[in-house]
Image (cartoon, rainbow over all chains, first blue to last red; front, top):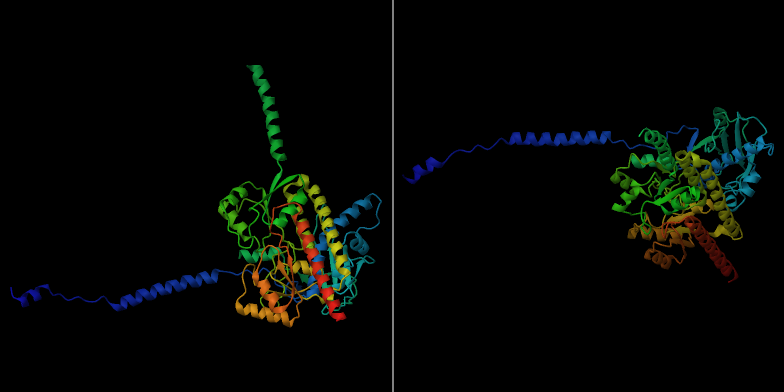
Length: 218
Length: 309
């Protein structure tokens, strides 16, 4: 067999696979990746743990001055103490040993060293705020501690509103803190929310550990 | 035979009642993640519960990696007290690995604490300061939260826990008041402080003091050369006169900064070293407050020396 004949026998035509099909396949895979990634991103929700604030509220974390933030922290911590002392005084009242149901400023400051009422370094560094327990009028069953006369820059007036606990509550930490841009704002005649708002008071919303936990988990 | 049966029935009743009573009387095993929580819980529960540390003492809680023995410990706990805001995230890894994520009750000590940003974070994205345990005021908030939650798990001892929490809170307030009185004798208006680590914001806040700069962006994370240069410039510009480093986290950065700026240096306790103990929080708080008073005396002495020159 001649060389030419041998070549003719083993040669065959190889048709390349269509480049168009390959391109389409790669494009489809690419599109699928994009769709999956897009859906995943859209499903991923970064939870904003801070509740949406109304214009009559302020965030303790973002909106308060250093002085207001320090006083707010100490007031929040004072609230469970106030409730515990209230429970003690109620029990003494039942036995006729106390006329008061809530601790006065002197007791808080002198005996229990509770900030921000105690006249210590914290008090002097944070504007020497004057505190008063507001008892001379009816506040819809609430008790109020009023802080005013602070002398630091950007300092507010403060209200701690303790609404009465349900029967049987012994370890309460419920209370609201309000601030007024005028450090000498007088105590309100009522603690009904709308009246406080009309009077220029703003409720302070703390950024709590529970909120931060929610953010971390998200 | 009939007599034996008659005797067996009441015996069984008595035996099961005894077993039930023993099971009920079993004190709670309360787990904790960080040193101060050991002190808080130990002071609250007294001898009516057992306090169990989740990890061995001597580890740095900022970069802890869970170990096998941690999982064994968590299996025997009835409840775990956590910081939960970024200082003990490894505890959640341990719970997950041990399969107790959904079965072990957790007490989030900080659930009601009003958090503040790491000092000197203003103008940038504010980051939560998780060191709520290095402060008397905020510690008390956590002590009450822990006592309240433990009382829910062990109602028979709830009043006992509450009383102990109050006594402990008053004891801590008295310590704070003592140092407040010491500091009140000094001129604190001239303190311009920086800290190596952002852990002391709550402590300084409760004394009405401010931190102007924090050197390490995050604990154990060294600043870049540029960040360090910026910090040195910031310290000079703000006329910082005291740098608070840390007792148990030595850093040669502190020396570099001291040499570059001439600030005085003191060391605070981060409360995460040494053995777990009931008295650790008190001891370390007293040590920190003594350091604060010493720093203030140093500043006052320098000021009076320069006034006489």
